Structures are given as structure tokens and as C-alpha cells.
Length: 449
Image 1: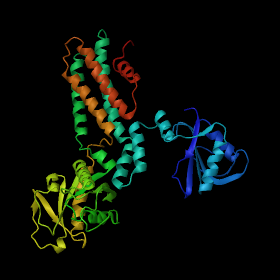
Image 2: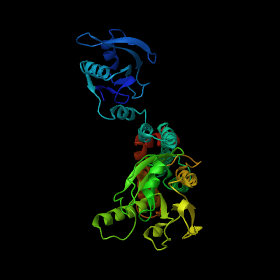
Image 3: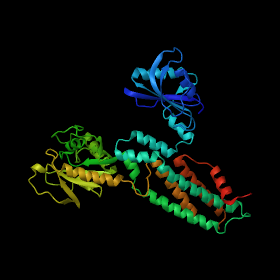
Image 4: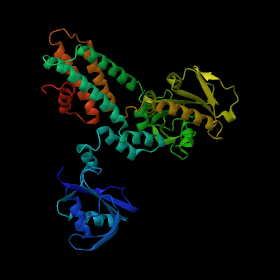
């Protein structure tokens, strides 16, 4: 943390402008070495010529910015060099910085790591920032931006503070019984904990919306061979992502394509045609198709309209409330299209002519939006670690509320349950401090004043 680090902060490759960031106690000194001038006023952009610290050779004319600690991204002194984005210019600047005394190249994620260590970001904000950089759709951007601004962390920190307060009050009753402690404090703590637990349970009843939006909704296209699954995949992707052939069993493995559907991320999988086969490779393809379908958020069962529907087909056994059923080749069908298959409405379409594709996209968009749409009550967990920590917190609160306060060691065990619950919440944001407990005790009860 006492070293000064530098790295390219913008994307690799050619660009009009590239940004190099320097952070640490020698950042401003390094800037002076490169410009042969005093550092500019903080947060004031200035055009300056940059020179090599050893040879004195001119490197570039750059826009420079300086930020004094703690008012910077990392909480340290920070310098940003906005240079021309040619590869030779970037390489020359990085080589020049390596020649500056006390500077080293930053490790992956080290700037953000320092921002966390210096209290500029909590762990949920760090994750939100990473998601913001990786976001590919509008809905992902909105969720990541909200998290990077602290919306999710504020919820968990508020709950942790309430638990710390309850624990402080509870331990005050245990450790300072001869002081002026409010009557019936234990019952008040139990009421507060029960209310907090209900809030957590409501928060976890989100059907994994935050995680689904972050990772993308998984859609499996399944059905018998030659139903047009690969052609449909290509139509959705608007490119030849999968091989199309009249030969049954062409698709042997799962072919995946990322799509942006109405601002929401969709991962579409074209799978092997489901049928009984003696071919060992095709059997493996069918197994993978079924496995992908069983874990998918949505399924699209595509049937061949030129064939009599087989209501005992393997794919029909996978129909549930998250399934759309479509019959392809509707433009050449000679038979009556059934209104539903196993209770699920049927959509007629023709991938070749485009008939029904707009209706299918509309249905898919509505399904995806319903799976991803954020609750009006606030942001949802976006990672499995959030959910797991909240579940462990809830389990600790369950143990607390189930204990008999009057039993031997009952009070001590109750206090430990609250302590574990607060610790699990603190792990989500990365802020666990035992001084918080002491601060609440002395502030609320003025012990030993």
C-alpha cells in the first residue's frame, strides 16, 4: 500500500486517447519528473509536454490531471495522463514510468483493491464496478451502475448496523446489569431481530433476478431432429452461428450465442435433436441437450410442422411453466395446428419465410423481462456469495429466536448467534469492525460516564 503503481486504465489497442493512471505517495513526484514542472492544481486539467526521465526525449503532449488524497478513486494521490492512443506512444509512456524512482507496474485490479482498502468502495461496489465494465445490455448497465453507487451495500450495511445495535444492547444487559439499562431490553431485541429477519426473507424471494440479469437468461432450443432449431438460432442471432443441414443429427454439441433482447441479456443454446440413437456421439449430444435444458431459465420446444406431432416425444416431457412451444414450417403445413401441447399454447412460425418470428420475439422479450425485472423494493443480490451469506445470516437469526433465554448459557449463545449474523453481513460488504460494537454500547448507554 505504500508503493506507487501505474498502469494503462483504458482498453488495450489503438485509440484516439489512452489513459494511464498513477496512484501512490510518489505519484505527484513522478508527474513532476515527466513534465519538469510543478504539479497542476488538483482536479484542474492541463496540457503539458511529457519527457523521458532519463534521456529527456519528448514523449507526447498530454492532458494531465492530479488528485490529492483522499479525494481520488483510490484514496491516494492519483495522476492521470491522457495521451495519444497509439501503441508506440503507450509503450513509450509505460517504459518511461518504469524508469521513475519508486514506481512499479500495477497488478490486476490493484487500483480498485486500494480503493476498497482505503474505504472508497465496499465489496459490493467493487463487484458493481466490475459488472459495469463487463455490461453488454442496457438492463445490465443500470443494475451494475446502481450497485457501483452503493445501493446494494447500503441495504446490507443498514442491516448490519441494526444487528450490531441489537447485539450491543443485548450484551449491555449481560455485562452492565448494575448500570441504568432499560427494562425488558431482551424482548425488544428479539422483536427487532424478528423484523429484520422478515426483511431478509423478502429480499431473498427474488427468483435470482439479480444473478440472472448479471449472467444472462439461459434459453434452450430443444426438439426433434430437423425441426429447424439451428435455422431458428441463426435467425435470432442474425448470422450463421450454427450449421444447417437436411441431414438429421447434424448438431452434436451445444452451440451458444449471446443476444441482446430488448436491453436484456439472453444466452441461446442450439442443442442436438432429441431422439433415441445407437450412435455414441449423438447419444452424448442428446445427453448434453437434456442437461442444458434442465438448467435453463427458459425452454423453446420447436416441433416440425410437416410431421405428425409425437406427444410422447422426449422434448415434450421437458415442458413446464417456463416453456414456449412453437411449430416450425407453418408455411408448408397441411395439417391442423393444435392450439396447445400438454397445456402450453402453441405458436406457429416459419423460420424460412419469417412468419411468426416477430410474435416469438415478443413472447421471449416478455418472458425475459419478467425474469430480470428488478423489484420496486430495491436492488437484488447479484452474486451467489451474497445469497449464501444472507442465508447463513438468516440461519444464525433462526437459532437466536429459537433459544430459551432462561436456559443455562442461553444468554451467551444468543449473543454469539447475533455476533455470527452480523459477521456474515459484514462479509458481503467487506466491513467488519469490532469497534462498532463498543461505539454503540458507550453511545447508547453512556456506560462509565
